[in-house]
Length: 64
Image (cartoon, rainbow, N blue to C red; front, side):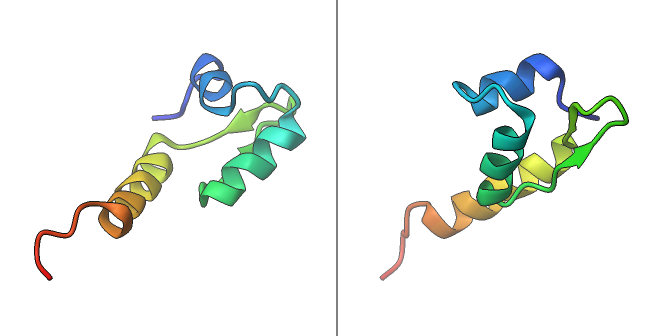
């Protein structure tokens, strides 16, 4: 349901600070929330919808 801390760290590598990670993810178009302890909270469905949207726009165009 949510990305794990390891998955988020891998996605945002080499960024370590939560504020920098938030800026990076928001630039990608991913909705980011914060947990009460300050760590990031990203829904897997939010990430997959951004990936699908980018793939459709930037993917191969089979017709002219």
